[in-house]
Length: 185
Image (tube, rainbow, N blue to C red):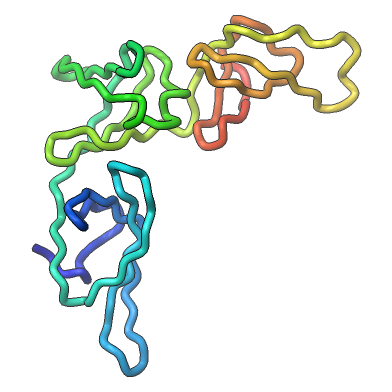
């Protein structure tokens, strides 16, 4: 097992029996004290972030990880099915595992899935996705003096504020960071 000094950003470590993704590491040597490593990490099962201090000589277990690009296939109540385009293996994740990611999943969309010990734990989206508008009110004629926006419901159930000229049935680009409208596709 590597020492705490050897832990780097992006690795998955086992802490208190749970997998944690290392987001940031800092090696510190205060004046008259011994050196330590401050690690900011996020629990991959529950999503909670925490800071932990380790002595620089402590050993930490690094878990084997694998990243695969999967294609979203369909949603069935609480289960979301993904297909590996290379092996055609189907993997199902629950809505609680996905969290807010499920609002940006359109059929055929590609996502990166982090596997720890051959189990899928987290899903990373691209920075933008293309979604189809299924419900949107018509804009009021003459209301163009300022940047007026209206709510539009996407095919995934996500509500996005869009300009008045966007119509129902159009495909738009949406930011996965803050859920904002970025433009037409």
